[in-house]
Image 1: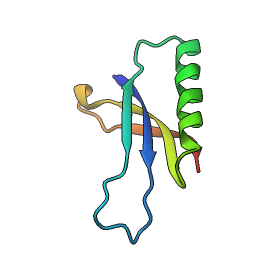
Image 2: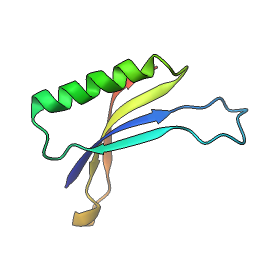
Image 3: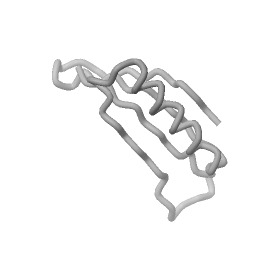
Length: 75
């Protein structure tokens, strides 16, 4: 299993030409302190967006299983 921290910009529904910003960081081997620091950085980054989600993505593709996501912050 791999663990990713993801920042996902949520665009307005009427936006048809713009691609949302998306950042994925592999945090599988991060310590709890390092993970918390990255979450704090993403939350600081969120101030520049109207709507976004920060989520922890548990990826089980290597094990042939579906992924799961925990939403940590939503704006």
